[in-house]
Length: 173
Image (cartoon, rainbow, N blue to C red; front, side, top):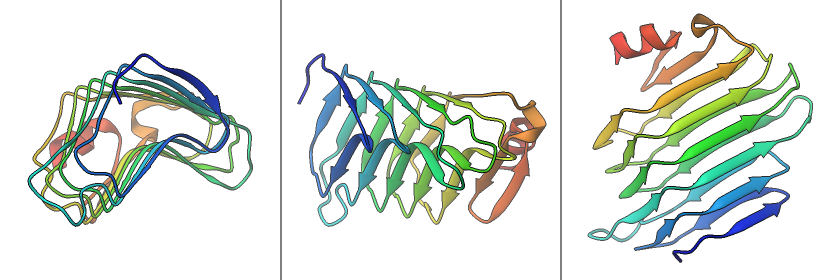
């Protein structure tokens, strides 16, 4: 599935479930709801092949109260190359929790050269949240920007440790 697509959908800009050996490239996606891209059980029960998600532009935004919003969520996904993507999460509501990049039990994956932007006044903005993603091959050269928050106000969670601000995250992980 490699073509130049444009889509406006409500719910997920992109949702992939139990997919193996996929290439998803050069798409512009927009969601009017809580998820930019959501990978669920990609390559979880099959090894030796990789899912390639590259050169996509994703926009997600709404004004829901007390909810969770994700630019990219990798949930039980393995062997994923998530490179050169731009994710823009616009959540103007101050009572929501926002994640630029959320990794949960995702192993042998690469997250490289992506741009994660969150626009929110919420005090619960996470640049990255990684829980039990123990074998990440590479997590480098990503850019984090949070409109409406100072650098120190954006939180990062990596394998059991919380960090306030990118500098603390970079020095501690």
